[in-house]
Length: 340
Image (cartoon, rainbow, N blue to C red):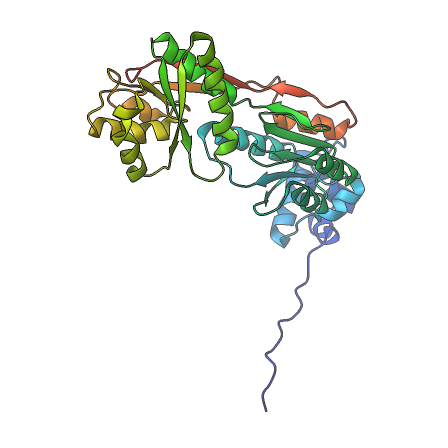
């Protein structure tokens, strides 16, 4: 006769009462210490004793219970999708997450690939976050903003080229990147300018506005702008470089430094002199671009916030209900080096 596998004995989950007994304090003191409540004076030796007892028992505060006591969760949701990883965005999100953790928020990343804008907002709302920070490349509609605020989100913030009605907006206008690159090339006497349009998924929310900015900068001086589809592959770059004489271009803004390095190598292999025949400029100001020969010109990008975003989110959570704010976050400047 077959026997069912032996079931493991039920694991006893440590409680705050267990921590209180081991530390020799009240349950209220345990709550104050482990929830970082600064309104009650508790000596440092007592705080240390409570933390050591919790560590010894493996006790973890119950997030849902804490949310019920506070009237809201401490979860800040960061949706993720086909977002190109760049040094500026990586730095921004690292600073945001570390700042939120210091303020005792739980940061949760949520995959949104395959969902429509309103489906994604509904899925986020099911988690009852206290705040949602929507990065560039992920759609949010006014209807989705309403879903989130009605579910209890006290701050809905978008990062992108355009604000969304009902949400706070940190505007990262990618048109400035294209404009800065082309203004630099025009100032160097270039009038026939290619603009690389990456063919990889998730780039269009960045590349399309950069092309728009490039065209706006070229128009007043009568410069020509030619979009150049390019995959991030050597073969694609070689094919584009082989067509260069027929394109009649004397400069190229290559979307970012990585595409610029890829294309510049292929141009040189095809006998196109940089910058004598064609000037090249990228964006992001990567260190490796300065190690090339010729050194790569680039567009440097910086983020200008009146105060850290984590502190702004915390203020909105503590004092909800203010009107949506919109802040122009992106600052750009062209850096001239040998390639242009």
